[in-house]
Length: 141
Image (cartoon, rainbow, N blue to C red; front, side, top):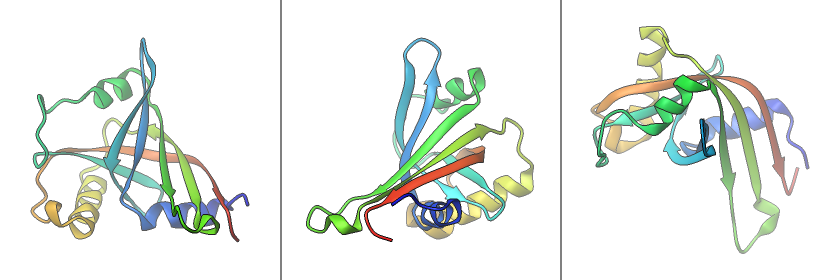
């Protein structure tokens, strides 16, 4: 069953893990698993943290978004024993290169509350995108 946009947004906001797909200038779609937070006014924040090891603090997804601000976030629920519980949500996003400090702080606070490893807000920065459209599907109503 196709999810109504409000239901899709509710499911997106209930989770914290998904796959962010940006566009690499040569390779095309460049999916990456990410943690995220959603604001009530339709913004998504993806942290660049200091918790997980990285070769650099500037990541490919940032370069991709700077070159092409379009992105998508895919979140799904999978239950191998009960397929009536399957669902997915896709948010089409547009990168916000210079978000307000208030918006970034709100997203950082949401991430800190949702993810124990982020309690101290160990972020280099938060990538901010605005939700443009939402779609989703669920095996059950």
